[in-house]
Length: 115
Image (cartoon, rainbow, N blue to C red):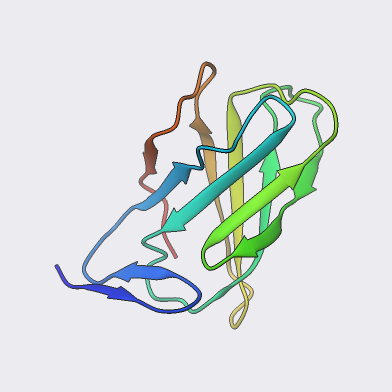
């Protein structure tokens, strides 16, 4: 496996899973993740978060810096969280369902979905 770090993301060749590292500044109302191993489909154009509630909408996250994306909802978020990634170039979309569990901590969570 060869790790390649660019200004916008970290990619690992020959990897078949995405990883989501919860940023240490995250709390009940502000959530930020570092997205790794995007599978080589290019830069991300959109990242969205969905709370564990079935009727919850998809919230658009903002790029904070590098490969870190954030959501400042302004009210408490309810885990588990699903993350939807959309490629900037191909517009392909994948969903990592319930990848961030209830009771999440500042660690890396992995999903088997990939572009």
